[in-house]
Length: 464
Image 1 (cartoon, helix red, strand yellow):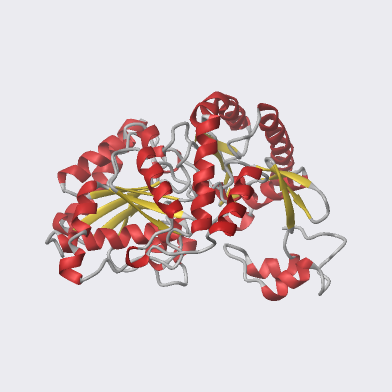
Image 2 (cartoon, rainbow, N blue to C red):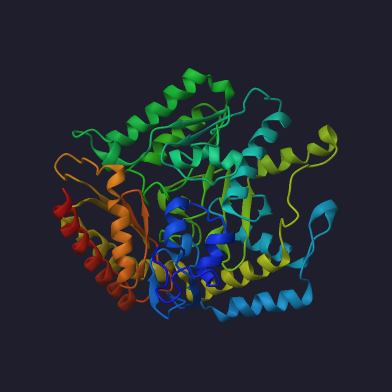
């Protein structure tokens, strides 16, 4: 990202010290060493402000997180109250901060399908890693120790820990880390535009995806497959909703072979897709639900794993078989994160977040889809207040740009120059603005993006 001109990476500048001391996640480290960081110092509504005082519409809610924007005073006040009352306590050995009980009860009441218990973690990665462990533990407890393999999808993102990173179906999360670990399998990416045959309808493609899953299960042995992990829509894999009938077909296969379904709601949860949960939008009936990000609007690290009644009851058997339920973190249910999450959920309820997203989503989706007319946009897709634009070198053949062409990077750099921060997922440009965004701000966001895309079209034509 461009560095501040006035600071220009002098050793004592924020940028210079960042390059000297800070290892950035998900960053081109060699390029960052040369260019330095883009230093953000303040937030205001749907905007963030950098060290030079320039404001940007944050078109990705940070990392799909800041559903309430970047200056919600009620969340700051909730954090301060909790810090002054009980800044830390744990949930080990039967103790619990009272605020954790309140949050657990609230989440169970909001669950997309009936759920039994909640275990708190600190990130989406931890939540999905926990779900992976619980799947193994559950099958040990019910006498199926051979049923341990899990299936995720190519193009999926579930996190970066050893377990969650293995579930992720993106090469950059695996490369160099010796992932995925044994027992984690991947099936067809449910991206109709990129993966379907030219003569396939969405329903036919969805049926083929289910057939591919069933064939994988049969090849591995149905008695060995424990769970299927799925985001309601592919997040970091391109902000891609599933093809029509996809989850109905998939769930028929899972039911046939007694395979658990884990819904990764880390991105979709809490209104993003026009329902409280992506599972409700796409007809998913999960056994385990993971959530994070918008749970606290990103204001404090917290995530949650909700489990069904059969799983919850089975886990009680850990006492007899193992002596203790031996999983959890020091910060599982940190009081600060819980207090912020509770206040976040209160705000969602008061603003009727689902109704609000449904009200403004048509304007967002119409503007997003208008870019399908661009000569370098092959597909525009989305639901609710999330979507993406697939950049292509040739619309007729769906040919992609070469990876080293860095077209997606060029688009977001031009967008930043115009006062918009968004994110390229390879050559998909993704949008997931704060859920508090106003219609005028949607218009402004896409006006800025239109300038960036037009400049990129010219750049591409000059460099082909």
